[in-house]
Length: 91
Image (cartoon, rainbow, N blue to C red; front, side, top):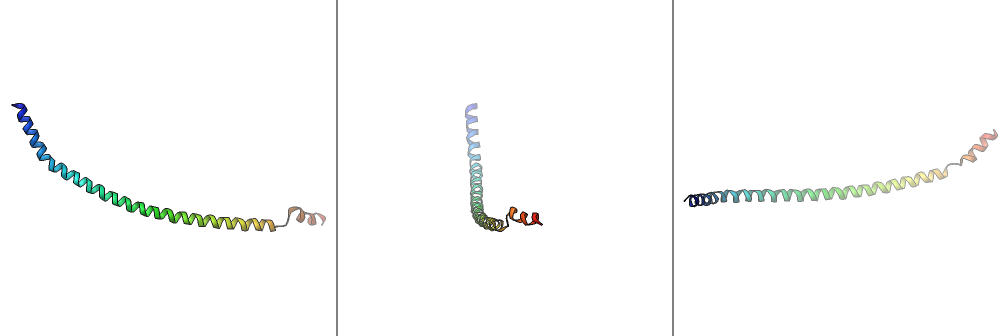
């Protein structure tokens, strides 16, 4: 008799807990779907930021290269050290 009583009691517990469990699972699934949508939106925004920063980096690299070329050109135009030292030494 104890087994039948325990078995029936267990079945009642399962029957009563099942709707709560299903509701909990449904709430969890809804929460996960919302979180997934948030993460997708965040991913899109971060991808846009990466693209913008990549473009900015490329532009800065180009400007740096142009500035280096200008500096190199100015250095080449400077008089040589030996040529500028000779006139001073003769004075």
